[in-house]
Length: 68
Image 1 (tube, rainbow, N blue to C red):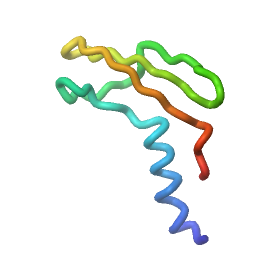
Image 2: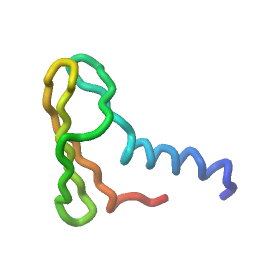
Image 3: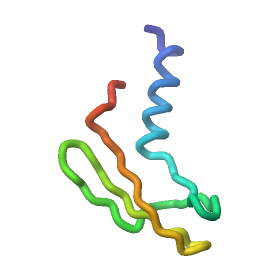
Image 4: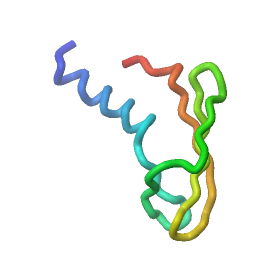
């Protein structure tokens, strides 16, 4: 596998784990979660609160399935 072929997979994994989400209600880009907690076995739960509209939601990142 050449570096050119590997780069998109690495960038996709980075975006999935560290990308900034948008508020599902107003589409404002969020900077950092209000709460981040380790849930065991490579899983992290984030709680987000939108500064613009006050909508709160959760996401989860699973670092255990990264193949890159």
